[in-house]
Amino acid sequence: MSGILYTVATPIGNLGDISSRAIKTLEKSDYILCEDTRVSSKLLSYLNLNKKLIPYHKFNEKEQLNRIINDLKTGLNIALISDAGTPCVSDPGRVLINELYKQNIKVSPISGPCAISTFLSAVPKNNELYTFIGFIPRQKSEQKAIFEKYSHSDLIFYDSPNRIIKTLENIAEFISPKTKIAIGRELTKIYEEILVNSAENLLLHFNTTFPKGEIVAMLYKEEQAVDHPIDKETINKIKTLIEKGFSTKEISIILATLYNLKKNEIYKLVENIQNK
Image (cartoon, rainbow, N blue to C red; front, side):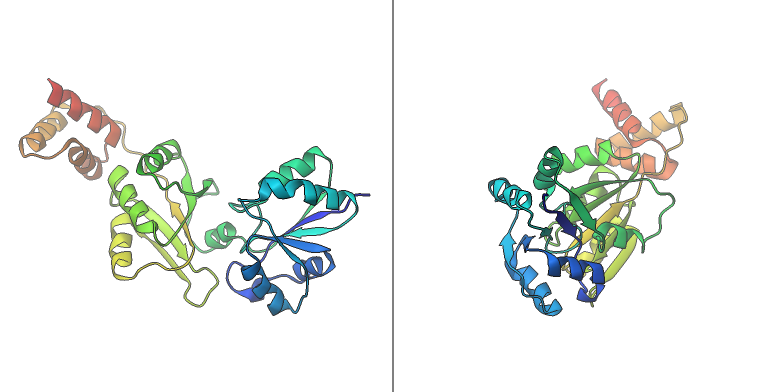
């Protein structure tokens, strides 16, 4: 009989969060696949476990595939862990899992810490609907496309401390400075910080206190604007703002914010007026 691949969730910060079942699984596994042996060796040292660690990350996933499958077919039991949290959630492992299912080799999840569920348990939310996209793209144009595509639900993503300020700036530009966002930083660690505020206020906060540690963020769903017709008064407001030198984007943000109008509709209307 083939062995079993165990996907084992490990702490996202506080090592005390590891479960007894996870410890027993690591202990009985023939070896452990991990992202970074330096990181995982600290966990094993904390647990007083002496197990063989084999690097398994996004740069060697495919080349390690045959070896792992052959070992499982000979009856070895293998544990897969990531640097933190639950494997395959924005971490290596998906390539392996997909292949194991094709070959009918058992995969057994050992549940435990996950940054998403930890974060969601500590922030306000109106319903259960959300979209998780993993790490948000770096490119400004790609972020804009994502904000537009997933505006129907709360959007959860991972980001790095070096990029979160730029992401907040893009949210303020593409949606609104008043956009509501929740951010979790250093979750379960000593300097844990959970913030819920507008994009502009979070930018002020992080411009004075540089964000350290891994970040989970949630961009709250946009409040639906009132769908009433664009009347003559609104058109006159647009013309006045154009005469005052405001840009198309500035006018759409101002009117959408003050009068709860749809920003995209205002934007198109401003362009039409300017092109006449």
